[in-house]
Image: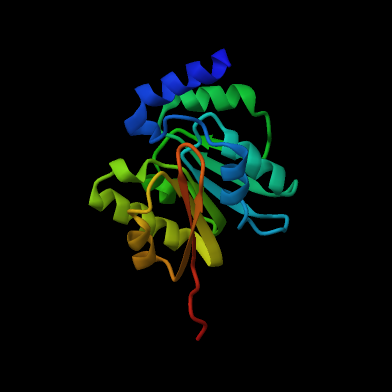
Length: 185
């Protein structure tokens, strides 16, 4: 219990970085990773790793030849994950989601995001969503957890197919599942 309180204090102190007041729960982790394909040799990108709860959920769903690139701007969270998640499939990148193109040249199967979208400028939001759409394979999905449904329209303006699921909890979570569906010639 003490560790949960300590973690909540850390998250609250860094609310503009984490966008959260508590770590995600199992129901959120299961929902946000539900669109990861059931295949091996996947490339998964995570925006906003935090302490790695969702990262662990991603790793539990993918095969031995898959890769996860986790982006996290808060260096102490990167250090925490490096210490507590020993998995050769995971690459931790201490940088923001807006810089994903600097690190990846391969197409991505899924993007899992828990970044604090509400605290970003309109320009940064647009850049992240356009970059995410650009790196996804056709039929690839970006799943985002937020504490508000406010930004759903923004995601719908970039992605071809978007659905939203509300998870009643404290706090209430909104999970967006947004798919890229490029038209074949």
